[in-house]
Image 1 (tube, rainbow, N blue to C red):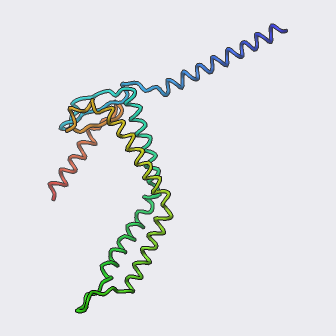
Image 2: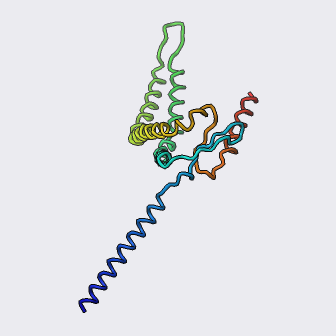
Image 3: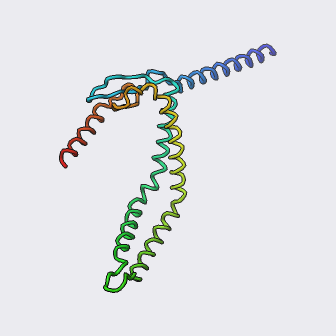
Amino acid sequence: MFFRKTLLTTTILITTISLALIGKSALANKNAVTNDVYTIKIIENCQIISEIPLSSKQVQAYLALQHEENKMAKLQAPITGIEEQLRNYSQQIEQLSQQMFTNSKQPLQINKAVLAKQELVVGKLDNLMEKHQADFDALSAQGRYISKIADKFTQLIAPLIAENEHHHISIGQRDDNPINKHCNNNMASVRLTNAG
């Protein structure tokens, strides 16, 4: 009886340890970033002229930057939602500013009715800004944080791109093809430039 309990306990313990090690190994493999997954592609005249694999440290910095940029996009959502209101209030204030002064033969005078309207609109703008101050603060803090991460990433890849700083540089997974996006954007800007 004692032998069976000991054997059962030992078997359970070995099984538990084995499962833990398998789980840890699977998690490590899931989180492992191979050096050949992410690259820097140097593009000239719509052709990839060089492809440089990123080191594990560079990939980690790149993924951290991408993660923080995703956070930034989420933080921008409330601000994007009020952009139209901000623009509307700003335009109203500008229009009222132009109407505020009456130009007669006498010295310049302020139209008090227009001034009162402007103060009302400024109050609405202030209320909107105050209501979303936490959103603006979070966005600003995230921007500063992203700047630090971007600087770190830039320092890590600077030696790889030093000779190619005048070329278009695309960073992403090896299978990504930045050519179409890059060349289409350049062609669109060439068309826009030539159209003017």
